[in-house]
Image (cartoon, rainbow, N blue to C red):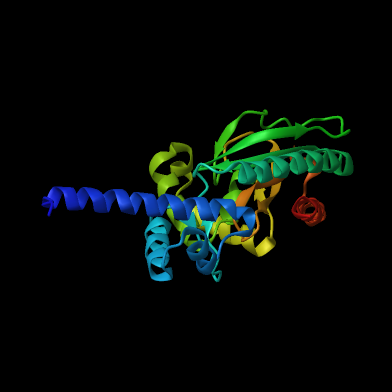
Length: 259
């Protein structure tokens, strides 16, 4: 009868845990933006539901998985490597977002942007100018901004689930000096205002003087924040009396992206 050392037992147990965690991640990733129930994961992996629950709980705490407030389905964390089907859905969302940007620029006459989220930041992947003579070119395609900064970054941050947003704010204040200058009170106040209005307004975040931005978050199925659609114009073009109108157009464009 073979004799196993304690190190061998621990090593084998560690390998088994990694294998099981990988199987769970593959099962959740295969479910795509619809998410996976615990029952589905157990059936697809052959693991017992209590084991799946324990693994999912651990991966939630590490950010490998997400479970939006009030939901039973699990989704991949934003930074996880995704299977081809999931990557395809992300690509389709970006394509739909680019179509929405062109629509927004034509509808409003102002400059429209598409931002996608990556970790603590947002990336501008599309910009389209309207026919108004004075262009508000606040951001270039390929520019990165921390969440919380600018209309797109603020809308993206406000769109996160409570637990994830609180963690993101902690990390932004620690790792993004531009956001740290604004302070936690400013962030929390403007997140609350954005949620109340259903759109963000950025005018004094130090990005571009004389320009106002308005944005709404783009959500995946299950409430995961994908990014934001934004309109930017010179201050005179976006007085308070016009902001609600622009926000309604933005929300309409977001609804079409979901469809």
